[in-house]
Structure formats: structure tokens, C-alpha cells
Image 1 (cartoon, rainbow, N blue to C red):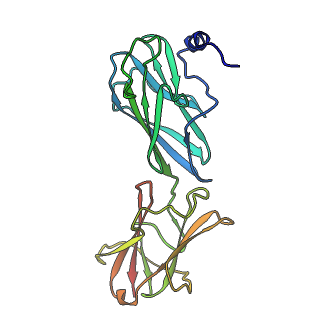
Image 2 (image 1 turned 45 degrees about the vertical axis):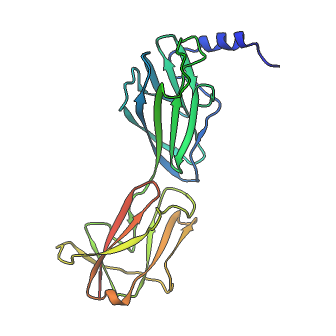
Image 3 (image 1 turned 45 degrees about the horizontal axis):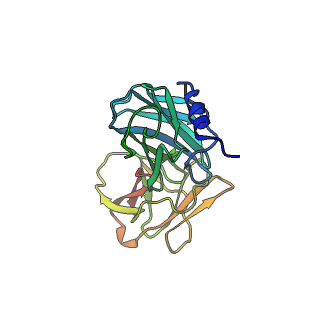
Length: 257
């Protein structure tokens, strides 16, 4: 049964100014790993006093009188989590959820970024324009990367290895995020100076693979990037850069014998 429009408006008017609970959302974190999530208010284009925050899975207020530029680390959430945010118009006592397409336009500029444009029109708040920019926010997800595991040492140490070896570069993202995790064109390596003065630690483990590649080991809950090095690199040093598609770069240094 469809409720009359008057009853729907009356129900909205009863929502308190505390962060509301929500049963649905349009921002769903991918994968089966954990994510660090941050949100930023990028713009406000309304004279009314607007508040913004997270409604579900936890309740957090980012700003109670948003002006633009506010940012908050919302915490760590598991892949598959649906994030529902809210905007409150304190000038008229109305609350809108990001799952409501009448007042929230959710887009996804990239795999790990969402943009929400809020619109107050069609409500008792008296705003007549319908441009979904009364308040504009972004939500960004970042991998939980905790450094490289043996046999590769993290900076500032330099890993010593025979040129031409294939090195198992191991790391965890706190779960399985799939294999499409690298930024376009990565991993890469580039020459660096060998005169860093850093601790030099030999690589204790190499593999027999003849090419570079990435796998996820579910038993160990870690990724293994097999890096096939070049015999011509003997007597030089290089920096390996595993840049992920969340924009973060993770590097390790190597000295080739």
C-alpha cells in the first residue's frame, strides 16, 4: 500500500536532529578486506544551517554547521559494509539520508571514491532550486596496508639480492581485495643511489618464477607479488614501488649483486 504524500512528509518531520538510523545505503565498500574510510565536505551552497555525518554502520557527526572543508576519519570498516550518511537542515528540522534519491545524488568517480550531492528542494525547508549542491561531500576508502613481510625489509633498510632473482614481495591488506589492486602502470622500479648508509639485509627467500605476477594466499591472508629482476641490474640499486589504486605508494629498496 502506498502512503499518501502528506503522511510521508509528516513522518519526515518527526525525525530528530540526532544522527538517524537507516536500513539502506548507496555506498558499499568492495572486497572482503578492511578499509580506512574518510569523508570530506567539499562545498556548501545553501543559506540554511546544515549538518552532515554518518548514520550507519556507526553514528558520527562530521559537522553541525558545515561550511565546506571539514574532514573526518570515520574509522575502519569491512568490505561489504553499506555506509549511509545523513544531512540535516537545522533551519527547518528536516533530516535526509543518502539512500533517498529525492534528496541525495550518489555518484562514484572512481572505484574507491563516492560523491554525494544533497538537495533540500521539495521539502518544507523552502529551498526551491534542484541542483543537488546544497551540500557536496566525498567518501574515500583506503587499504589497510601494514608494510612488507619477510623476506623483504621495509625502509629504511636496503634489501641485498642477486640480480636476476625473482623475489616474493609479501604484504597484507587485511583480507582479500581481489587482484585488481594496483594503480595503472604499477608496480614499477627505478634506479636509486646506493650510498644511503642504511642497514643492508640479504634476501633470504627467492622463487623460480620466470615472470612477475600477483597472487592472493588465503591461508596466510597475504598478497605475494613475484618480482622478476634483471641480471643487468648487478652493481646497482633500485626502488620498487607498489602503488595501489587508492593512490597510496609503498616502496622497498634493493641492492643487486
